[in-house]
Image 1 (cartoon, rainbow, N blue to C red):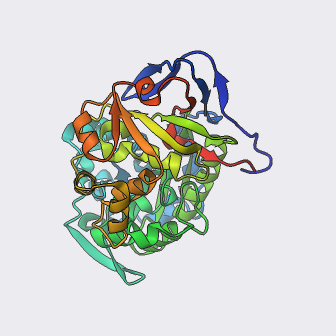
Image 2 (image 1 turned 90 degrees about the vertical axis):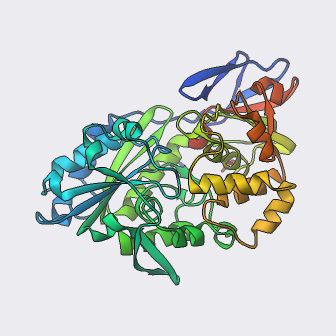
Amino acid sequence: MPDDTEEVTPTAVEADVTVPLGDEQLTVSIPDSAVRVAAPSGGEAVDPRTAARRALADPHGPALSTVVDPDDEVAIVVTDVTRATPDDVLLDVLLDRLPVTREHVSVVLGLGLHRPMTDAEIETALGDNAPLAENHDPDATVEVGRVDGTPVLINETVAAADTVLATGMVEPHQYAGFSGGAKTVVVGAGGEPLIRYTHGPEMLSQSGVRLGRVDDNPFRDVLDRAGDLAGPAFALNVTHGPAGTLGAAAGRPRAVVRDLAARARDALSVTVERSYDAVIAGVGAPKDANLYQTTRAATYVILGARNPLRTGGRVVIPARLPEGAGDGTGERRFYERLSTADSATSLYESMREGYEPGAQRAFVLARALREHDVWVTNSDAPALVEDCLLETADDPAAAVGPGSDVLVVPDALNTLLVPPA
């Protein structure tokens, strides 16, 4: 963290603690245990519409009006249901500023290899702009160039557009450091070759590919270079924390990501000086809808800048999992790999030889499981969880056990656990 940023450390608590469970809160009581809570400062919330308008008025690079010509066909790639991005607001703001009519705008839902969004989900996410939207089909793509010899395939609607724009959420990401920027287009509206290349074992094993790191990150570098070929030419992204939306930035995608990543890093970092028997990691909606997304909490904790667990320590994640393992191509590949494995070690070693796009979450989870157990509690699908090399319990207290030294991370996907400076 920068020297002028106040250091935040876990706080000891004596009362019960709460963590998210879907759209609700779960109260956790752990008898005879020492409990600390890792709650980042969170920054100050802003109104996303106001922040987006200000960002467009002061972009990184050329103004939107100079990027888009009045006779352009425009494609805007937005995030999918797995991201808590205020896409309805961001689309409204973009459409208000575009020098083209709505008839010349297409909106593509950046699914990557996730499942298609339902009509109801699209309407909820995009509001009055829902009629403009279509689900990305990774099998209906066009090659627009190559990066490191890898074809960059892009959604047909996006490839046909004169100008490509994108919304996005700049939040901590296991591989890209932070999401957002070109990632919305080249992965969200991309094809399997680039996903296979960026999410393969050779890339993910590189030291610079890590949570919270943007600079000198090979994964992020490939995404940015692919974005030079496919777009976006202009991005409108936000970042968020426990308080809500923390800010927006617009303009050149690389600059947008670095701007918002710096803001997020200051707001989301917690310094961890000691080790714990267990970490209770909160996820909440929409990420806890399926096991594929939920397991991010475990890998963010174990494989982040500071692993807070002692040898033999465990991560405990409350999650209902209404979608089970998940319904998309990537989620199905993730489940198949885990459910057919004999052990985390054997799975990790076998996957080092390669795997299908989408299965990378199984590879990264296996890497974490070699050192620590992961428990999922309060689930509607305990048998499925146990099929995937994980442990289950009815509630977090049963998974932790009495007398433990516990760290609670209420928002594990938006907390950066870091070592002392």
